[in-house]
Length: 319
Image 1 (tube, rainbow, N blue to C red):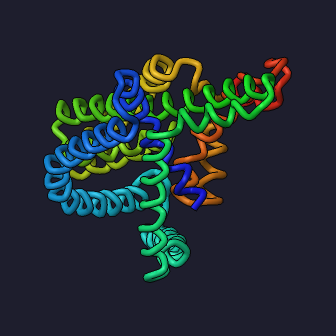
Image 2: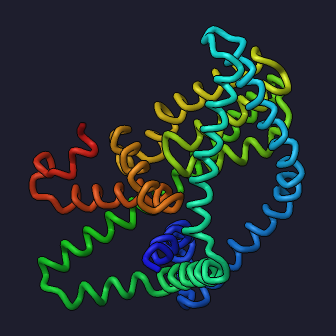
């Protein structure tokens, strides 16, 4: 349930600006909130009607290409410079597949245990939507009332900390969306130039992967490399791999500094560590939430610390 509450803050952060704009124009909070939510839902439905049919049509050939790419890599390992026998390659590949099956089975038994899991997912989704609605409708008034019940000094620290946290989360969500669009567009253009098929499904995978900083877009880009390998051979695969690396450099050196500014200036090692810890502890949701939670904690600490350079948490930015 705590996870659902945190997830509910993400759509609230995206829609916060439009709702507040309508409130400042004199719209009642409930009317402003419902207007923005319904507008966002209609936009999402419109995008889904265009994208989902093409995405569904592309998943079957994409899966076939990945299987063929896997088999091509196995053949290269046995025929290539490593000197592995076909029996060794088969044994290692079976061990790898068995480990993946065991992990998938453990994840499935832990997360999807029958009807109880379905009820939990539905309940969590509804709770996240309710949290988003009430944060948009009453979040500013609730924060003001909490501050009114504090001493002047505590109220000032509360307002500053809350503002820093919300500003960081808001900019983080919007920044990742922009980064994902840039990554997906750049890789899609590269794939079109090389002549790789299934550009739309691959671009969508890259866009979704961008929500896992540093690792997501790269791993989803490797799927594009596999498709290029199957349809165009090793030359096309190497070209697409170079494109993926180039897009990663574009993201890290240009896009993210421009989009995030100082909001997300976490050291790359910190980002990798928190994603790993979050993923091990809470699975995919934990890996997704680890970076924004860390960014919020660092931002609040930086805002409230009397000696910022001596703050222990500031090491996440100053390593």
